[in-house]
Length: 327
Ligand SMILES: C[C@H](OP(=O)(O)OC[C@@H](O)[C@@H](O)[C@@H](O)Cn1c2nc(=O)[nH]c(=O)c-2cc2ccc(O)cc21)C(=O)N[C@@H](CCC(=O)N[C@@H](CCC(=O)O)C(=O)O)C(=O)O
Image (tube, rainbow, N blue to C red; front, side):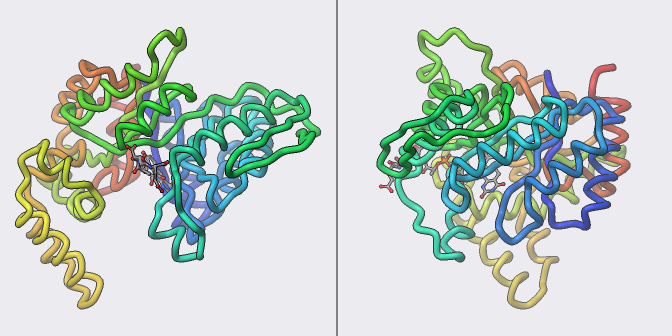
């Protein structure tokens, strides 16, 4: 099992630098930085981490070809690859529709857009001149004037068609999920995409994780993040896990109250223990290990620890290093 960690660059750069170094010192093999226009720039942060770490693979988790042209993504991640001595990985996905529409980006045809973007990026990374005539992207003799090196491309995917596409075109897939049931379903689409392809493929559980010696404290710390995941999840996931629409609505209403009236306590009350179990990997080190073992049984090959990591971030990273990530 590989272990990664996700950071959202909504903190000062020196905090991100500290936590990334701490993660490397505690055995994490991958660090993934999210990409939203309103946060610090993903490539600038990846460069900072490249300069401050030695071994961890460092990735955009995830870029999108809506607010950034794939030629720029190709160049930017290749630059990080050069700076890091060949440690870059690229995560790419359709982007967060609400965030993109806030900056007037027309968000349509995500499957075709991702397929074309990955084709363009791969072509540019060969170093040869690229001619490409797609529905979204056109290239006439485009070429990077520096060596990109071999950069694995992972696709962020939740839905069946995107999961299949990820397996067809990618080196791995980043799935925002924490429960084995979701990976059992995803695996069918992945296997369909992998058919007659002879390649290593990294199935990544890009999960909300919260660990502490005190399991209840850990689960409680996960509740706000879980509330956002619940609010953004499709009905098919609630049906799969038997979560009632009433419970979902209670969370959405509570989140709304939190934003309008600052009442975050009601969010904690609306998020059930069951939701924490389904939408996060939370609890004591033993409980986290148990879930990781369950995920491994359904084909997960990398667990990425996403927010909140624990009631205390630094302590949680050290607990992961000491008690969860094998020596
Ligand atoms: C678009 C959506 O794809 P999805 O992969 O299921 O979900 C989208 C999310 O993965 C996407 O929003 C990601 O960008 C979210 N995301 C992040 N989004 C960000 O903006 N920034 C991040 O840093 C980020 C990190 C991240 C990490 C892991 C991860 O899994 C996702 C992450 C979907 O609806 N897929 C359907 C296909 C929809 C479809 O058929 N579309 C047709 C027609 C649609 C039309 O007519 O417009 C088509 O594309 O041609 C499916 O897979 O079945």
